[in-house]
Length: 299
Image 1 (tube, one colour):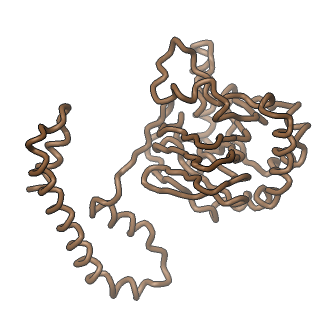
Image 2: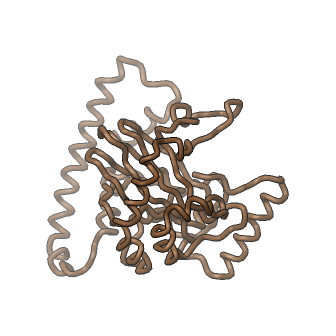
Image 3: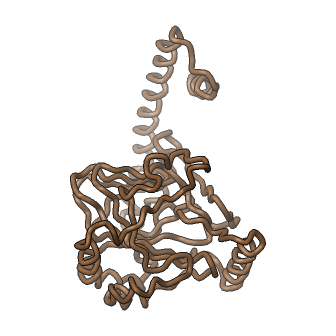
């Protein structure tokens, strides 16, 4: 009853009046106490099974339990361009499912060295990642729009190779030969060095299509950096790739005193068939052709 009352109170457009706050706090305290007691009760019932299945991964069940206990929000795919139904909504994918990443991770030191060589010339080689016309709604991007606080050095952009940049970073280009690219004319692949300045946050946002996944290869990771996709938080570790669905709400922060840098590139969703990729490829390109502009907006 208390839980239902709280949900109804906070579903209102207007905040509850001040005189209601003590009552709502009491209801929240009761709900929290109940959830804690329920968690203890469930763990007693599950203890034997946890022992019996100690050699089996139970991560998915644990996330299920945290959601049941109101400790974990449910986040869904919300692409800004194309939604492909019946693809699983997975925040972070298992690294072991992408063995081709081995050779790219092994080249981390070479890739980082080439990025540092680029950065020696200052920020003139970098572009602001967010470039929205001032006449368009800026929403959460106002602070980062046309700012080098979040800047990039393109290797590929919307399916077009930056040959001068690839020539300047030959070992990175060689490492990316193992990259199974998400190829969509006029839209993908993209591969960039992404540099997030000190004391800078990328606000919560969604990517363009769940037909692709995003890979991060961390290169320079100072302390106090973090990354959230949906309800999952991860830390970057240099040379350890992360694969995630960027159509699930995600955000990034660098609370350190120095910049953070990662190599970012996109791949097809591993759940699409070859035929589905062909159809998505042509449909996406056709939308851009119809409107006379690119349709696969960047994220």
